[in-house]
Image (tube, rainbow, N blue to C red):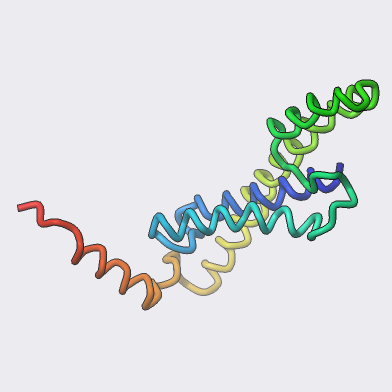
Length: 145
């Protein structure tokens, strides 16, 4: 139960921090995609590590996959499957809602306060890698003339 809640909390928090314009790591779509994929893997690893002790599938964090596993478990023990089916949609939803509240009311306010303390509203300047990638993309783009 806690693995689903905490894992979903971590993933939704990572997702929100990378979709917010002020906190995004990179404007390059490919890097953005890899960061979001790594966020899912990181969230699973944070709560369950590499162990399979909590369930045979690790932390699922996706109610659709969990319901599929629930239907597959009918073949083994249908009584036990129905006893725990409510956990699959409830705990990930609770984790997502908690992450949204945490992001909006704690993380954003803290970032805003730190930004005001430092005297600026702008984000960090682009890295050399981002500048090089932007130059390469601009060079490879066909002329619109």
